[in-house]
Image 1: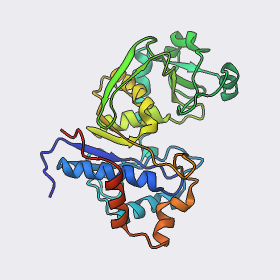
Image 2: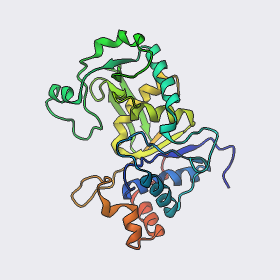
Image 3: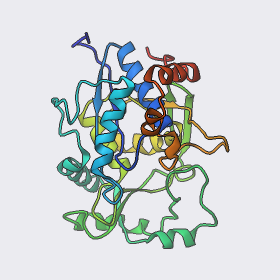
Length: 292
């Protein structure tokens, strides 16, 4: 039985853009274990803003596969809760409110650069980063932001404070530090197709759902620096972070949803048991560190 007074709140936040693979499963298992060890609560959030790739069958599969693995949660689309809706495509008003706050605070600006424009401005992509480095072509438009009543029509970027060190204590990897303008450049918070970007949506949702610790893959360490800036601009306290080492295939390539043979669905069909997977995850990662 969970302690109703526990202040720990974790989350599971899968995207229904493919079948969950072993890497997802291990990260979500760690999130589940840390919530249980803290006698806390776990929130399930369906991050379905990638409308081009999200599919109803993947929504069904992620619920089914995580339950098969033995995970349970206290709040979510299927369980209800005080901080819903727990589906991102139903939370647009929350994101619009945040966009207005960032606009009024002078933190964001409209950007008309295309992806091709960005690629031409760079010598090469930055390996391991999750978005292209932005050269600042539209930064001078920061004073135009107040003229926009809605984000429709262009992309919107957050202006990072160049030269500032953004540091945090990761609960797995220890101290992390990134320099704004060098390690992270002005990043998208609203896309040209009128969809809130990942960075904004997860910050708004984690704050609104009172998440106290985010457990996710190590590929998002740099995103944490961006999100700390957003939390600060929105007047919110960032949660703690626990970044799990990535699972890799035999070629040392990190697992992705294209690895169909390593999806939970395929492993189930092959006769793999939830208990054996959970034991494998326990052997691979020290999930209990730095919980206090």
